[in-house]
Image (cartoon, rainbow, N blue to C red; front, side, top):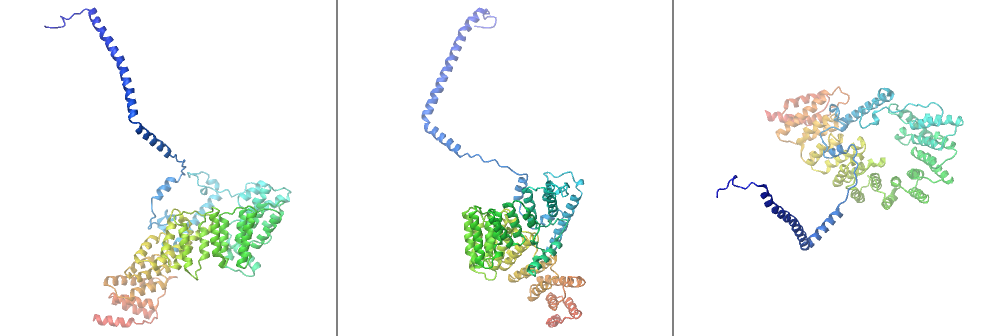
Length: 635
């Protein structure tokens, strides 16, 4: 049958009647399908829950463990230099780079210890001059360009602004540390009948006792000569003569000074006033008067603070002669601290240990007991504490096994720890420990000391440039004596000249190390370093270097390098004849140079040296026979 569009029925009523039943069937299937799907999902979940109950319990326990293990860290506050510090920690020190203070001008990088001192003082002098100009002309330096703010780059307020006689003017002078001006203002207030508050009077007393009744020495106003003259007159008056050369520059406590006068004028003398007076007396050598003031304080039923007791403990060895009497006085002060319920601090125990260094044979057992008391009170010893212990146990004149053992125990105690400066004596530990290592020839202990120095920022506690030179000099001397020459040369390249400028004795130790390990071929290179470090004018060092080169016979290459070095030494003597610090010719030096030239087959230069003998009025010893033998062999 042929079906086409024309043969289909086109009546609308017929189409609607056929579509209606299909619509109802589709709606029924859709509704029942949703119901079936919903029931199937619930049935499937029930079966899965029943089949995997153990698995779900394990997952729940695992999630509970994860929840318990999560610890929210505390908030970390980073400073402005945290990134720079992190970057700096990833970079090791460059042994070929100059000291950081000379980074701005590498042309002025020092090559000797004298140049290091000169350039450092020159740089500090320029800094002081710039600071003086800024402070004298503050109106020209008002804008702050630094971010963050750097206080030392801005003018300091040093001029007095309050002229009228008032307590505010007194406080201004105290804040600016103008001792004489503050004392004058205090006297004017009393003459005017004005009552000065107790706090202001105590502030003034603190200032006077801190600086010994003198204005502090300003950077642009040195007063060392006046202080030395006053100290010399005071020392002659009190003792008849000076005991030490350091007394010339040491400020002493003057009789009836402004501190005592103002203290006696106070209407009410509290603990703070007594503490300032006692600490000032101890600081400037009036130890007996300090104990008298403390007795007066107890009679007035006042209690001292921990700083007062620390000062008195440090002064105890000065007021007693016998060792037992010194220790008895220290124990009495500690008992009084306990009775007055004053808790000791780190400085208290360090004062005890420092005083024990002057108590002879009693000190060893008592120092260990003091350390035990520190640990019992939860006070961690500082480097100064261990330095005092080493000073108590170690005596340079009588080294023993006990001294080596105490050093090992101290190093075990401080190993792996980082320290911060807590008192001035902390900087003495490393140099003292290295001195013990040098005297006992203990290279392993020296390595432990140096490892502690390089840990963290412990290097900051090495001290100033003078103490650094002492530390590295002792270490280098020990290395030259105890280590193989290859190890010595490794340390030589690492330390010199970035950290250490060896003195003539250090270079002499290096030459002896070269001689011990038969590495004399390196002497010409060492001679260049000697010249660069400015030690070429030391006759004994030059004579030893020449004698080592002239003593034995070597290969022609080494002898040639020795001859070049010897000629350089001769030119040094000839060019420096008019210099103030030029070395003088000695018969030994001239003989050694001639022998070195002969060994290198430089006969003409050797004959020239003979003429120099006659010019310098020196008598050759056996060099003439060597010249004759060399001439006969050549002929």
